[in-house]
Length: 314
Ligand code: SPD
Image 1 (spheres, rainbow, N blue to C red):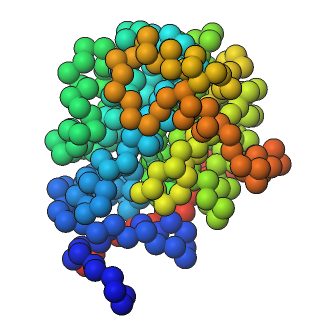
Image 2: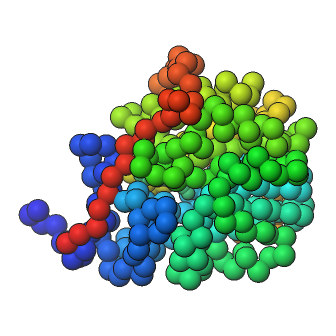
């Protein structure tokens, strides 16, 4: 590569499509193991800080995780207004729980992650992400299957957040991107309950997953909104789906959003305020058209098969 100064000896290579690779140069490997459920690495990269990688797929990193976790959490919390009970499905890094517990109205948050080894490794190596959120008495950590918790919980939740690893065929999460799963979530929501899903990339070659997930959520909920945030280490703008038992008002006055955040959170947000949030819900025309045209619904019989491969090497 003439003129380029390449600094790393070890690289995480994430295949974004069968023809596109995003390589992150690694300075240090902090943890690397096969857990009961998946391959896990926690690495320190040169450009984006420390990152969690599962089955070769980049999850989040200290360098830009705020561009993912703030948009994942706060629009749903704002849509509800004063959530007291919040259920987090996934979220092993602890950063989703960190954002939830910024809200002073939250009395109880339960985080359910299937992989205790990943949660333990993140607690050890990624304090920048969890910021000791596990010391907050409002948070309960459950190591278990989200589907079992949805089957057995007697609570009714004001906000449910689906922060799962992308639905690659070999991974543990693809069943949780289906109509059956979204139906189970609906069953545990409180009467004004709100649901948000991390819902895949919105780059032109990859956006089919998102638009089909939107169609799948529409099979269960009446009023579904897509929005996005650009997360540079994901190599694509990232999509989310927001819905609820009642219609969700996403086109608010930015000043009203700032007022809610000012009154009900302890602050500290880096990217999300009223202006930024309103912007996230204004998607370009080609995406809006694709969303309107899609009819495919993911089911347990026909689940999503997201492309996902990666490796670490010299
Ligand atoms: N916390 C789960 C987020 C999953 C995001 N996947 C990013 C993949 C980037 N190519």
